[in-house]
Image (tube, rainbow, N blue to C red):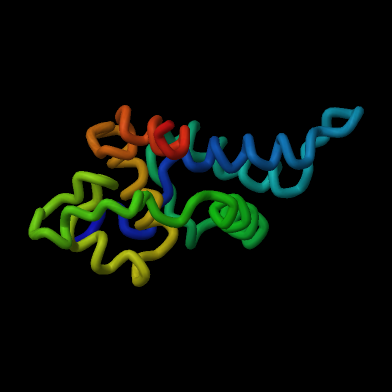
Amino acid sequence: MIAAHMSAIHITDIEAAINYWRNKSPADAAFSLAAPTRALAEVYALMTVGQLEFSEDDGWTAAARDAWHLWYDSTPDTPCIAICSTSQGDDWCKGCGRSFAEVQHWTEMTPAQKRQTWRRIILANEAWRFNRYAERAAEGPAR
């Protein structure tokens, strides 16, 4: 198995999607939420009331699923930083933090599986993409 909760989406991704839509389509003067925000807020409310960390997207309304996928499409697809130590035989990539299997099967993974992988590597905060190397890479070529 590549990641736990294969088709489940973590509550932090719901929050991120809600914030994306809140910024994209703020509430109107009567404080009415835009349709995508409202659809995701319903999922979030059910998760909160049920004290759920994950939610299966197959139980969502089409509007919530569409809103989440549009947010997902706005996020980076892969954590790759083009320094892949799995190609050198490592079980875990030092560059992006993915396992060999995750690197090999990335294009076959569902959006929920990819987000689970992103969540794990962000929480681990050990891959080179999260340390000083990433900061130097963003600065551009050395002078």
